[in-house]
Length: 361
Image (cartoon, rainbow, N blue to C red; front, side, top):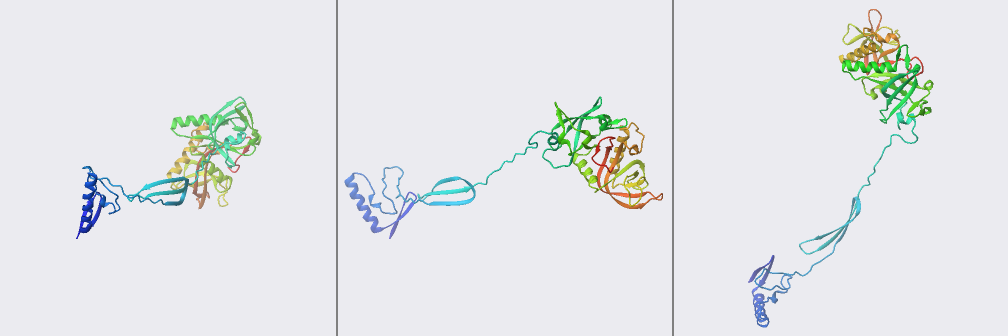
């Protein structure tokens, strides 16, 4: 019949014969050594020996050490890492992992590269053919206008000096426009800006004197636009006109009898009709309000606040830029056009001398 002894965390089964043999050996050992040493258990359960000294048993297991080298490769790479894992079987496992970490690329974009020219300052590295530059200041000084402009592409400011004759028509010039727009904003809590829309052609020849650029105005192509829209809206609207993908309608303050409709005009033929007198049907009240406010601002700049049709002056044009759908004719023969793809309503200053960025106003 077998007996079971619990030694530490190990369980050893001993037969009666083994137990008596072991006990006899222990007795003999005790007589010889004067202590109680259970050497007879040395081959049971892989244990060498333990000594009873009235303290917790101490066991020294037979070393069972095996070294396992495992190489694992994953999709991330970095220097090899060696890990030592000790298990309860006193097995020492050495694991080597080779990890591959994806490389990181830092891209630094410099807006202006190479020699600093006026073209680089205003266009940066873009490929735009023209760009709306926000006018920060415009002052007439004798026979020149001193402009301070900001590029929306580079964020850089530039100073230009241009003969006033290239930025004037009659008694209106860009300096007066800038001042009047500021007054209108203050009086009406509006946020209109003046944009000097500059074409890329020939500006690389501009010469810098001190901190001011002096381009050859006779070779420049530009437009002066007044808007409370973002520069991108201004760019997209002008681009659509330049590419003949939209037309220009010129609204007035005279209301037509249709919903969201006003009388206006156009320099374009409308379904083979002369566009001098047309009915413009907008899509909603917001578009009507935008057009109406532009008419009031243009009249204010011209010094004729009661003028319902400032576009008739030929100096400032209130331009609704859109595609249209022909709806028929009114009883007096005037074409009726409905706004389709609406690009916004803007005020365009028609300067008397110099190249026009867009000629088909």
